[in-house]
Amino acid sequence: MSVWKAVNWNRPDDDFTDTFWKQNMMQFWTDEEIPLSDDQMSWLTLSHDERELYMKVLGGLTLLDTVQGGVGMPKILEWVDGLQRKAVLGFMGMMEQIHAKSYSSIFTTLASTEEIDNIFSWIESNRCLQIKAETISQYYNGIKTREDLYLAMAASVLLESYLFYSGFFYPLYLAGQGKMTSSGEVINLILRDESIHGLYIGMLAQEIYAQLDENEQQSAFDKLQSLIRNLHSNEELYTEELYQSVGLTDEVKAFIRYNANKAFMNLGLEPIFPEEDINPIVLNGISTRTKQHDFFSKKGNGYVRTLHVEALTDRDFLFDF
Image (cartoon, rainbow, N blue to C red; front, top):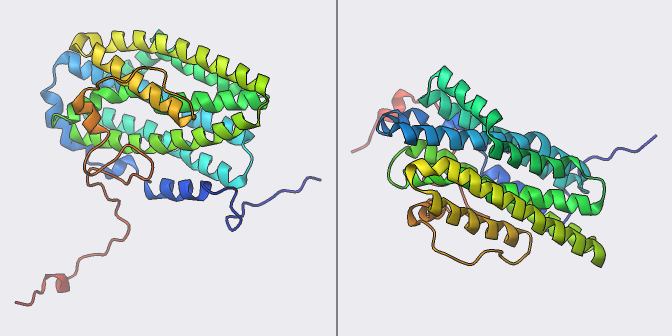
């Protein structure tokens, strides 16, 4: 009979997992806490092409979050040693589901049932989007060795720190101009989560990579290079398809290259693209006075989750002058 162990938070798995647990808890939020109805008037000012693009980028993000929450985190969690690490990954997987649900909340606020159904049909028929989901899922479902685990973690980092960003660009771009700001706040909160998700799994991946022998490391590195080439070619096609109608294709491509570099740095690797200028509105959207797109960032844009609520009484309206 096997011996089942209980997670013991009094004996740390390592010197960083407890910190990530606390940071995840600090950042916890739900979509019900954001007043999305505030965007309804702003939505009416957008053109048909702008609305269609907004719905499609959120649809794409919904699919990727569904894959990450339902496949990626559970598969990686299964293979990771350390019960505290499993707990952190489980929490992150739950947050991915909240991210996916938050997009549906935005849809419900802005669109009709027919329009929403059309977006979910588009998700299933869009070739570039399906390639993204299938490519990443193959790494999650193919774990058999330590090298496979490293590549699954690397694929996860690419999803969290790179592939999401063609979708994040447009909500950030509009919110930076004072449009769709409540939905933009949801994106900011999701960005904050994805930032620490990519960093944490990147740290775990670097540990696994260090345990591989020289030949395994070279094999894993070569496969990672092949993966990013395939993903980036597909991502450029996806970007052209979505953003051509609003004239932002080149700026989005620069943004995804920027985030591909960040993903590689999360894996402890050198950036793969030259440094270049990013649209300042979008760059400001991931680094503002009240929020920072990095680890140890707090809930931003003035967002504070209510923890203690007390009912008002007559006494609250008695003032001493």
